[in-house]
Amino acid sequence: MNGTTDRAVLLARLAEARTEPWDVAIIGGGATGLGVALDAAARGLAVVLVDSHDFSEGTSSRATKLVHGGVRYLSQGNIGLVREALHERSTILANAPHLAQRMGFVMPAYHWWEPGFYGIGLKAYDALAGSHSLGSTEWLSAHRTLELLPGASPRGLVGGVRYWDGQFDDARFAIALARTAQQRGALLLNHCAAVDLVREAGQVRGLVWRDAETGREGRLAARCVVNATGVWVDAVRDMDRDADAPPRPPMVAPSQGVHLIVDRHFLPGAHALLVPKTADGRVLFAVPFMGKTILGTTDTPRADIVYEPEAFAQDVGFILTEAGRYLAHAPRREDVRAVWVGLRPLVRPPGDEAHDGAPGHAGASTKTISREHTVIVGRSGLVTVTGGKWTTYRAMAEDVLARAMARGLVPRRPAGATVRLPLVGAAPGRPLADPPGEHLYGSEAGLLRSLPGASHWLWQDGESGQGGLSEAMVRFAARHEMAREVTDVLARRSRLLFLEPAAAGRCARAVAAILSEELGREVDPAQAEALAAQYGRLP
Ligand SMILES: Cc1cc2nc3c(=O)[nH]c(=O)nc-3n(C[C@H](O)[C@H](O)[C@H](O)COP(=O)(O)OP(=O)(O)OC[C@H]3O[C@@H](n4cnc5c(N)ncnc54)[C@H](O)[C@@H]3O)c2cc1C
Image (cartoon, rainbow, N blue to C red; front, top):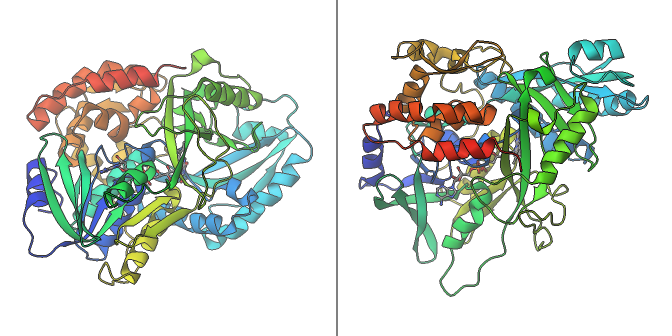
C-alpha cells in the first residue's frame, strides 16, 4: 500500500480506527513538516501528515531557491547557523542531485576595496564549510568577472569574487520529500486541514482533520502532534488553549519577500550574481533558474498572513533599481515576466511586540530577527516548530524529534537516518539553470516518457525551444505526485506559474482537462487562471 497516491485509499487509511495511536502526527507539509515526516518515518515510527493546501504551497515554494549557508548571516556573526547550513547543503546536494546542485556566485566589484573586504568574508565562509566546501573562493580580474557574468555592468568594474553555494527546485524537492516519506510508510495528505486538536486532561492526544475535497471530517489519535505550519503556527497554537484562557502573544513576525522573474538574457552564463549590500543593507541575488533569471529578494514586515500575498510597489521598484545598478541592461517594469511573494516565519524575540507591520505599510524592521528555528514543547505536549530556512530543514527535523523524545512523547530511536537517504528520483541531473524538462524527473524520466502525451507539449520554452510542460508531465503529477488541482501542477510540479504566468494561464484549461480525466472528477481551472493573472501583474 505504501506509495499509492489513490486519494480514496489514503483517506480510508486516515479514517481507519487503529489499535495504536500514530507515533507522530504533523500539521503542515512545507519544508519543516515534510522534513519531520521523512525523518520520523525513516526511523521506523508511525507517521501521518496533513496539509490544508498543497505540499509546499505556503512559503516553501517561494524561496530564492538557494541551498546556502547564508553569507549574510556570517556578516551578522551567526557562525553556528552558517556552519550548520553549510553542512546541510552537502546533504541536500548528495540526496537529490537532480533537484539540487552547486552553483557559482560572482560578486562584481565597483570599488577598489570591495574584493578584499568581501573576499575575506567569503574565505571565512569556505573555511566554515570545511570538508563540505563546494569549491574555493577566488578573486577575479574585471575581464574574468565579465567572462563569468556576461550580464554584469562593465562600467567602473574593478574585479570580482567568486564563491560556491547551491541551488534547488524548492517545490519539486518538497514533493520528493513527501514521496520518500510515503515510501517509508508515512501517510501524507495534501488538501486536508487540521481543524482542531484532540485534547484530554490538558494534553494534546491527536487532531481533527477535514478533507477539502469532500468535506469529510475525522479525528486521529497520536502520541505526539507537531505544529509545523510556518507563518500559521499561531493559529494552531490557539487550538491548544482553554476556552477561558487569554490568547498567547504571537510567536511569528511575518516578513514578506518579493521575487521578480526576467528573461535569461539579462544574466546569461551559468553563474549567479550577488549584490553584497543594497541600499537597505541586505544582499540581493540575480540567479539563473529554469531558463529565466530570478531577482530578489526583499524583507518587509507584514501583519496579515495570506496564502497569496501581493507585492508592494516599493519592493518591486527597489529590486529593479538595485539590479539595474549591477546589470549591463537594467531591467524595466515591462521586462518583468512574473512577480511572486513569500512570507518568512520569523520568530519574535520573547516579549517582543515591536515588529508589527501592515499590508502596504512597512512597520519596524524584521531584518535583524534571527533566522534560526525555534522548537517549543508546550505543557500540553504540542510541539511547535518554526523559523529556520529550507537549507536546514533536515537538522530542524532532528531537533524536533530529539525534543519530542526527551519529553517522552515519541519512542526513542537514534538520529541520523536521513543523512544518506536519497530522495525519490535521485540521479545526476542537468543544471537547474536550463529550461525545465524531463531531467527534473531524475531516475523517473523513463516512467514519465512511458505515459501518454510524452511528446505533446502544452508549453515549450520559447528562448531555447527545449523542455517545457508536456501532457505526460500532467499525468505524472496526478498519478505519482499527488496533484489535485491545476495550480498543484502549474505552480509546484512544474514551475510555469512562477516563471511565465502568462503561459501558465494559457495552459490552465488543457491541464484541467487532463487532470479531470486522470482524477475522474471535474477540475476547475479558474483559480489557476486568476493566480496567473496575479503573478503576471505588477503593483
Ligand atoms: C522570500 C523568501 C526567500 C527564501 N529563500 C530561501 C532560500 O533561498 N534558501 C533557504 O534555505 N531558505 C529560504 N527561505 C526560507 C524558507 O523558504 C522557509 O524557512 C521555509 O520554506 C519554511 O517552511 P515551513 O514548512 O516552516 O513553512 P511553509 O512552507 O509555509 O509550510 C507550512 C504549511 O502548513 C500548512 N498549514 C497551515 N495551517 C494548516 C492547518 N491548519 N492544517 C494543515 N496544514 C496547515 C500550510 O498550507 C503550509 O503548507 C526563504 C523564505 C522567503 C520568504
